[in-house]
Image (cartoon, rainbow, N blue to C red; front, side, top):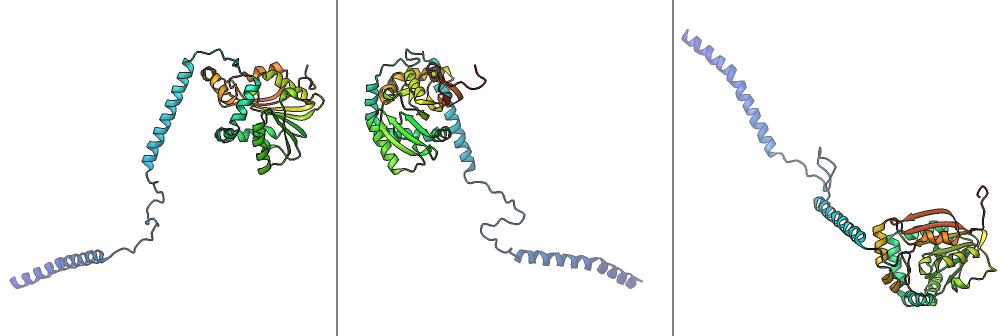
Length: 312
């Protein structure tokens, strides 16, 4: 009985132990197999399986911090400029009573003709003025008279079919304009001629009269604009792109405070009330838009003698 019990016990022990040992042996063999396994190499630049395809730009945090610093700096400078402009007292040059004769202005233009092109072109691109020139001059048609053509910044924007007489009182400016006309592409037929606005013939009429940033350079802008109106046909258009006073008092104070210095350097009275000049000249404005804090004026007008049907 004792031996039978011992045999039974051994059989039960083996029945319970052997499966456990076999299981443990299988686990050990699996662990050794995994230890010897190495995954195949990933292709360079390819994301791992299950990994997100989104990648973080290098130095992203640094770029965000730098942009924040720059933005804060720009905001600070603008705040300082606004505060400084608001603190200035409007000077006697309001409306531009700065003294500078036509002869003096022409002398300034002759002296700055060579550097004018490179300096002003850079500023115009930054302010998107070439785009504004293109939009404005789309309205030009037929025989075109351009006043104060300067270095010929408008030549490339006249539509095909226009016959343009580009005039200016500065010989040096016109020399630069003639060189530009010779070496650049333009759709219109352009003729360059030295002619002051005060010498415009009364017997010749044009379909379109153009002036871009010229009212600031005349000793008497109202008289100049009246002469432009007389040179335009009754059914013609007067296209103006000008700069002058702003919507904002603080900016007008800055323009007034620096008007004489700017006039002496560039022959330009940049603080004139353009709307008042147009009104005093008696032009009828069909369209008006203002940009750059109200200092840039985009105007489509016609002579005051024209009466549109329905108007009184």
